[in-house]
Image (cartoon, rainbow over all chains, first blue to last red; front, side, top):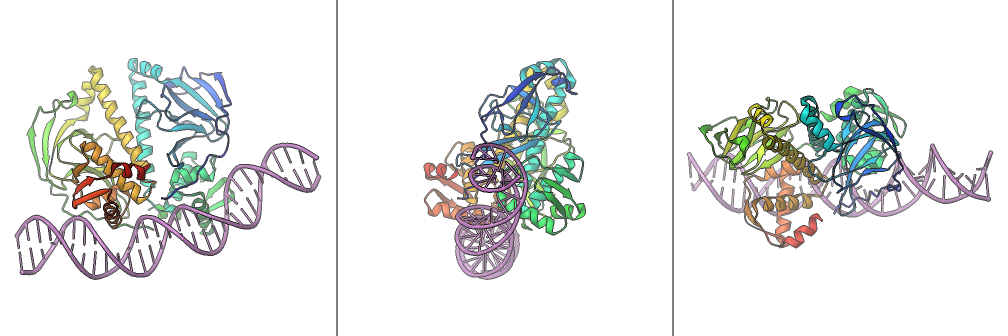
Length: 223
Length: 223
DNA sequence: CGCGACGTTGAGAGGTTTCAACGGATGTGG
DNA sequence: CCACATCCGTTGAAACCTCTCAACGTCGCG
């Protein structure tokens, strides 16, 4: 049956969110946005809620996730500073969004953005771009899930390095988050990381700090 | 390493495509489209080609697929009559498209559709809808891939039944196509189908003909 | 009738999960 | 300041599932 016990650790519902006004956004769609702060594990929006807003990460990190009927959890994506999320195919959110770490998020009404777009070709183009990048995420995520555990973990690390633009970086998310993103168990993720370290491909000075040591060998793993 | 030998059987490159003109499309975007016929396994467009057109299946069935560097093949989606395909996140096709069986396809220029959309709110809405449905496909496909073999096969069968609007239907695609869609091997697909038949959940009068016998039990499998 | 493509079945190997125990870091209260 | 609880991550051993390799059946077609 392949049940995975991936209960969420903390008390997610403690939505300690602080609101503040803001004009800090380099994209026109977010010009009239409101900045909000979310504590670790705070829910930004829930599964099934109507999707009225667009969100942009200013600082911190966000995960989208879906809890299946049998308790398994699937992480859809991780969003880092600069990333936009909240756009989905349906009117209601198929995934919930939660702050992985304390985060600041710019929020703007989706309809407002849409009306803005109607008068502004560039903004309209931006909206299409957000949706397309979401599709791109989903498709490369899909390709991850047909690979072996080692390939998945290496792909994940390379992706994180690319997004941080450095071969050395901190992971904001837990092993459980990574496991639920990659469709593996925390034990398999942990073992795979240990193996990669033993093979001198990476270093793990601490559990959350990663250094890619041999990019060539890593690239060869994912082919 | 988890290598799967999923070489494509036939000579795909024999693009026996017949062109004909048509006004047969109930969607305005395809009003000015051209109807083309493709033989079994004929390539409709290739991976890496610029995506200039939009396609709609009139009859037959289409699969999109991607061949990975190590020879593994991933089927992205199956498109049945009425489905629109060819819209992707990037300017170039990340997946190729091939006719699963002899198929008739309406083709229209993407740019023409876009220009049409600029003057027509409804058509613009349609285009967004196509992209969103693509995202929805990818997301539910993603959820498939984290499940067990039995869950994947049952989900696939239920989906096919829903799209055909009947608990009894013919599968246009081979076991290899199904396997590459579900991220399994043909042997596992075959064995799983046999198990489902032994459990009286389905019947397989022939390899390509499926009857869902106990929908309740099937629904309980995927939960 | 025999060939080739497709599908099924069997046995064994391999990878991932499961269950369990342990170690390390953090935070709290005495 | 230390003891302790808790959360997070690591490691081990065995079970389980899927894959791999191989052989056999079946169907359609030359």
